[in-house]
Image 1 (cartoon, one colour):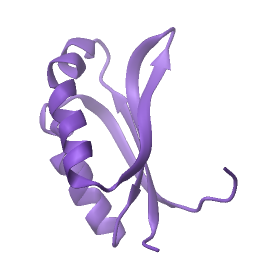
Image 2 (image 1 turned 90 degrees about the horizontal axis):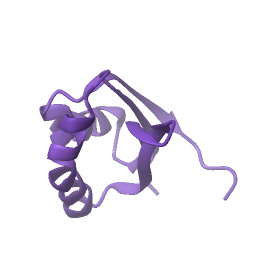
Image 3 (image 1 turned 30 degrees about the vertical axis):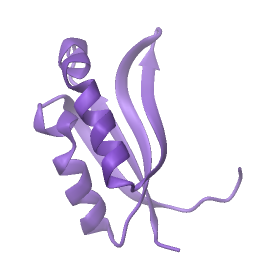
Image 4 (image 1 turned 90 degrees about the vertical axis):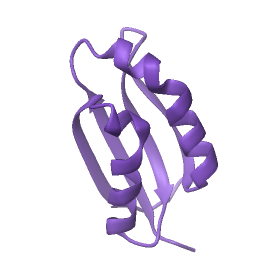
Length: 91
């Protein structure tokens, strides 16, 4: 089994329009690349304000490259991006 990586992205303030304009391209990228085990938007008061994904990748560099090519990242949506190796224990 390949290593797992948690990808935690926080949107820039007021960037919901950017998120929505790029959402279909982001979802297609997730589907087409096949490295995302699970993920979804983080919410603040019910509004999408970031992303949490778990990736299966060969290395931290591969996870970083995947994240950098995400249409959300290319559109400048994120204020911050954190990627860390992650180990599934429960669930």
